Figure 1 (cartoon, helix red, strand yellow):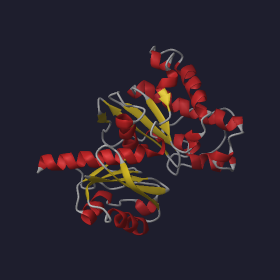
Figure 2: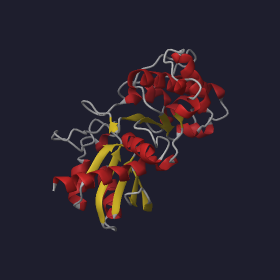
Figure 3: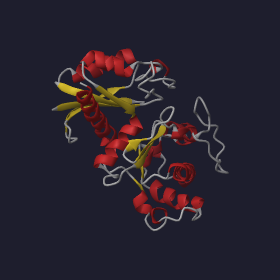
Figure 4: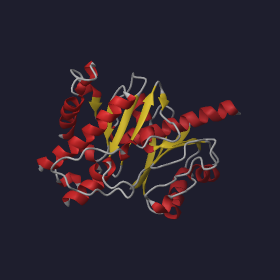
Length: 296
């Protein structure tokens, strides 16, 4: 049984063919350009295979309310060419298969929970720090969703006293994504994150903001584990800095071993590495196939 998966990110689409156990047989990357350029390439890839269902983890915001007339659409994204794009309908009509749909970070959270750093738990929080910043939360084996999916990358923070950068978020300027994402780091410091490893102040400020965000997530949703991925988090010096600062900010208020003696096991990198999102997309495809069989 072949399943299809799409991890639709701000810079690239990762398309894969896999099975219900998460094994990947084929993969292709397609640049995220305008839909009229990107989508035909994506469809052409999947038409090479006899897939039974498709899972999509997409950049957002997206509409996940199945009762909504715009379910399956990308909505108010800063990538204006993709605003109001009917992602699910387009892929259903092109491939004639059931489609599972969620955010890219929800997909990564699913992948890590089932096969990665969250395995054995009933929930985890996955946060990506890369082209954008977003997070997906699973609790009691259910993805968190209210009116819409969470937008944890747009929380507001206390500014570091040595940081006067205006921020780049087109909506909020200096929200978390606006000052701590990969593009924000490059706009602030004049170099991409990969070229800033030897500048301590950069990472002191970055760790401060990420630790503040984690503090809010711990206090509000109390995740079983926090998994941090994305291109910026490949700067491994960040992990001990974030853990230490998170403990300082919490100041012992949440008296749990996960936040004290076991902090190294609580705030962790993804065990699946760059495969977390596409693994989650295949899980979404598996779930969509199961739901389709039940409904029929």
